[in-house]
Length: 89
Image (cartoon, rainbow, N blue to C red; front, side, top):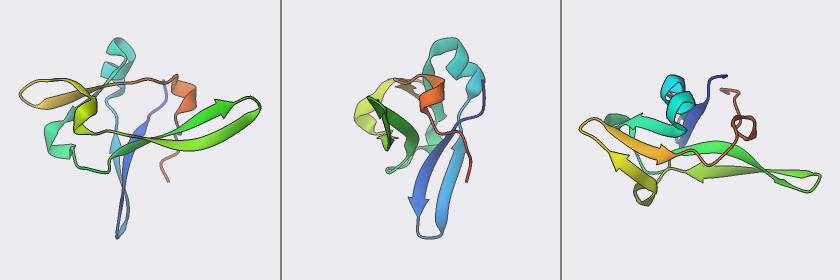
């Protein structure tokens, strides 16, 4: 599986956080350390409508947390891996 990055737009550019790929492949959930969670964090993805592909953003918000432990938040990963943009630019 190729690396995927969460992003957040800031005044100085784009902040990128590498997704824990081993956990994602095993559990189909995003495991994010609590220290990295901020409002505005998103996963760039694509929506297919017929033959048209539309860029979109899946925002990680507090209401999308499905579980948490002492150090991590866990989010569902509602996409196929190929629907998520993988280029870290």
